[in-house]
Length: 198
Image (cartoon, rainbow, N blue to C red):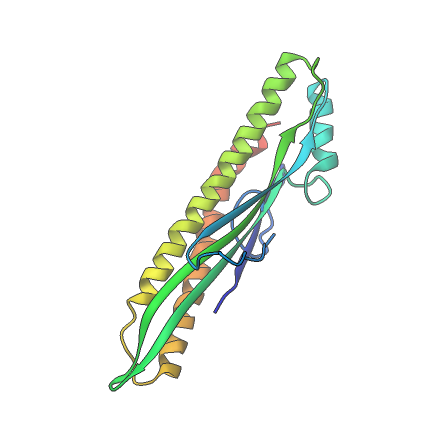
């Protein structure tokens, strides 16, 4: 079983949730050697530049995701997998893992060498803050992935594998809902600080 995907956005306006976790985040296909419980992160960038604060802000509006309406965007894809084994008394979970595939879209400075120091400092602070925000979203997702795997593996045996699979799927759905709530709460707590960056 796989696939829990959430998108988060951070901008001067309230973020709109679609479906995985972070400030700026797509989904990537696992490589042949991708472990079931691995966290795979791909970073993609948009350029920011300018000789003044106004030009820097304009470059963010011009190049950032969602036609410049978001400072960044990201996707987190949960990949829960578990093995059900029939036995004489019914069915049990033998193994459970939850992998994460994450794509972050982040700002990156691409300005001229003669950019005023104050503008460079503002751009660097903006980059650091957006990256730090995104990585906190990643940590939240990792925490939920660990809990999900641990609780799937700890499910009590059932009389048959169909019943146990339904129980596992219901557990996964509850974790997805809790994960969305955790990410939304984090964005609410940090929204004002993000707005003040530029």
